[in-house]
Image (tube, rainbow, N blue to C red; front, side):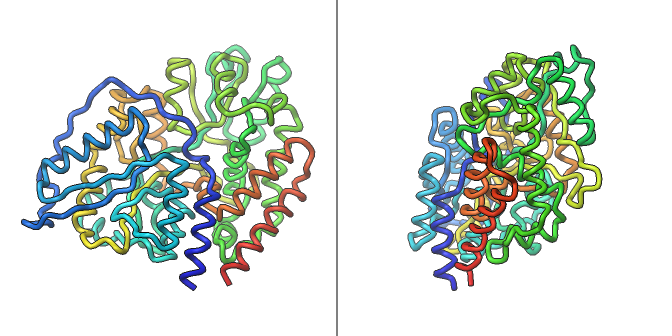
Length: 443
């Protein structure tokens, strides 16, 4: 059985999309001091310990931060050496595939949260970190609850979040004001806003899906709003998923209706995400769906003339009315790690509040700790968005990390075709076929 799980992990890691990581955040020249560099751990004693780390940020502006953080940690903990391998997003997927299929796992490795992380847990490639968090309540309680909970399965936490993002509707304040619009709180109000903008000759929502991943942001959110959590739990589990509940088709139809009503603009399959966010920033549309990790782009382009609101609730929907999509990038400790205490000490150092603020200051990567996004490192709208996120105890994972990669791929490919002519029922037939094949492989 374990070999089968590892084989599935290999396939899943190679196919996984990059929905949650599009774009590179703007960096800041501001600085924040960090005084958590000393006395992190005495676990190593006099023994010289080397901890291997597989990381995902080799690009300029990122790698310098991580190298500096490692140097600070090693200075405070001379008996612990961190040996980092830093690979790109695309290379990471292949790297993890090889390691999970039988290679030597690094002591600490990058992962996406949600279903992606669950694959490693099922394959017994990640240790339970719950006892470490329980031993340090200040550390455990310092995270935004939703992001730590996203790496917690059956009351056990298997990874530590260090980068976070929440999905909101972003709107142009000037466009809304010029058209006499208020931010909507219900789906009917949202559609009224779309109608008003369209009538006034303005594209309601900027949207482009030439790379086929953007649809999954929408449908993943709609799934969580329309389908009850119990059903989602069964279907998002690759061993039991079938996606035959009619509410999944309803979620797809809600999205397709936005397109058929002209709310997403024209020629959506010929535009990409980067193009349409430029159009939004130029005032050519009223709204765009985007993640907080990308808000710095709108701050640079619009200053204080952009705002955000939670995707409005759907009256009578049977899912989680308060559901907000999002996710985190996390570090897990390998079950083969010979020095887990030292590995956790490094993770604690990297995610204490002072260091988290430094991470966002120096690299632009939004951290996952309470109060870690400040106006010294981000604009007021982004800070407010993270304060809003502090209220969430759970978050709906990005669709590509919530479901098996084969299922996510079926969704994305078929939804792109749905933006042309494919029906909601045909789209879900493709998803159901993929889910059945995945479930069969788990038996």
